[in-house]
Image (cartoon, rainbow, N blue to C red; front, side):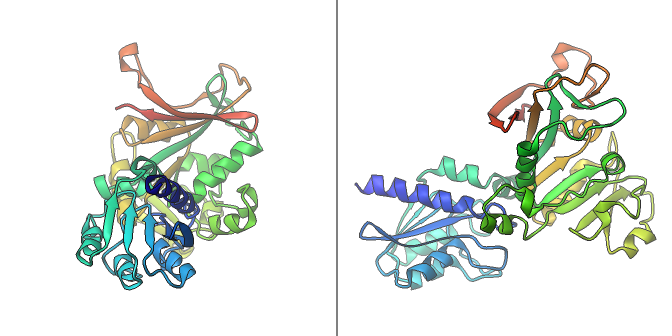
Length: 371
């Protein structure tokens, strides 16, 4: 019975954790359930940065947690940041047992929270539904383990692999359900990267719009509360001053060639500029990702044309491709999915299909490049 209860309560904690996926960044989104005598007495999930962690939300909901078991999807923190240590709060509340799905990959924690709980006499169990827990916060795990967040490219194509007509016309390949799905991808992202070609062709805004998320009102409000950082790769500083990415609706980072001075006109609009070194095919993408890691970007979404998407893939910097496939044909003169010149079958890029599902009239394929 205890094992069954543990599994059910951790599954509930994971469900709660996912409710923070649009708002907790840069913190990992965590869920917590407090149980006493087989009954849930409090639960919570990570609030927007600076707010309560999941454990504090659950303790406040419970009121009295004496003798309870806490089910948390990630090891309780042991350090003081914008909030106090959750491990200390659980100890002070009289919690008897803590079940954590996984150890925190953050080197500042990395088992210290669990050690503190054990030293205080609490029973601690780790590893329940760990695989599921890791799938909830892949970007945070990536940033903590390798020094940069998870990078996904969002692409839309016809059934014959085309992304725009030869003229550049591309709106809209996919239907409204797929576009709402993209809005949710943006809402989960700390940064959205595009190129100057896309800015000039589409005058994209790259913002999260609550009414287009297709979520319940409360969740939509959370999803649009904090806009992702808009990152424009513009080596020659060609972005028009009236472009929507400079409109102040969301923070923007405009990246240019380090050999050029920053634009005074763009600076006057309050837009941050970043000088990047040149790479083999343009601005150095690895340097950009290093910079975004310093800004605590866990989830990074690339929304761009075939050239920049191909450059990310060729550089081995894409963790996944999220491809929306529309049931239409656009013909052989239309533009391809990626600018990826390959000369032989041996040069092809193998992919693992991680997920495939229908989204409205379209299909969404998540593919993992095998470098």
